Length: 199
Image 1 (cartoon, rainbow, N blue to C red):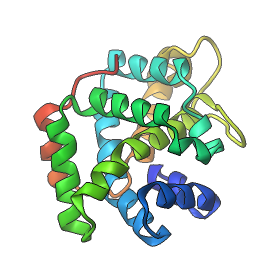
Image 2: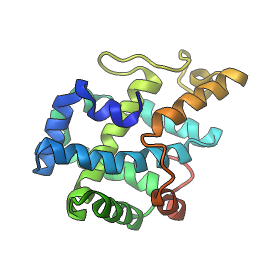
Image 3: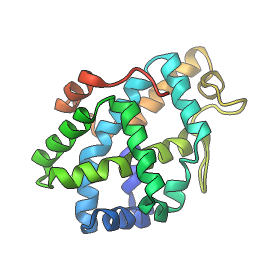
Image 4: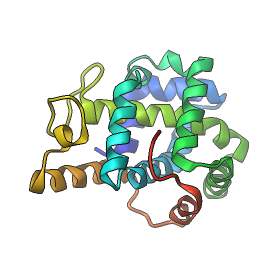
């Protein structure tokens, strides 16, 4: 299962329904919006986590928040605080509203959905992506369990292990974040202004 499947798979119909409700569209268009935007979010996170410092900052960001709640309780997606959280995540990932705008515009061209709709979807999906990562990396929330080596104080060394185990776990993270295995223009857009780490 990759990141996109973890968000809009058959087990998360309530999440898709709530996303559709917040966007004011049907579930088919909500899924289409996620299919366009989640891969870009996954790539941005993967870029941020490429270094030990970036990875540790990602784990600390997950550990300090209540991100797992968004998947466990999709009704939170409609709250103003969720929107603020999502926009903060986008700021850390993309570093510039221009990058978010370009990704939404590119997604609109590819999907036929409006760029306004996709811009509205980005912060919501950002919170859901962090929620999924919280479950996968830290084993937080309902029916979750870390797929990586766990225990300790949640620093990257404890979660990802060392040596061969660390490289294997990093590979698992990369595969989880890669929703479409497609070297599209999104990579070029992200390279323009993605920040090096979470803060």
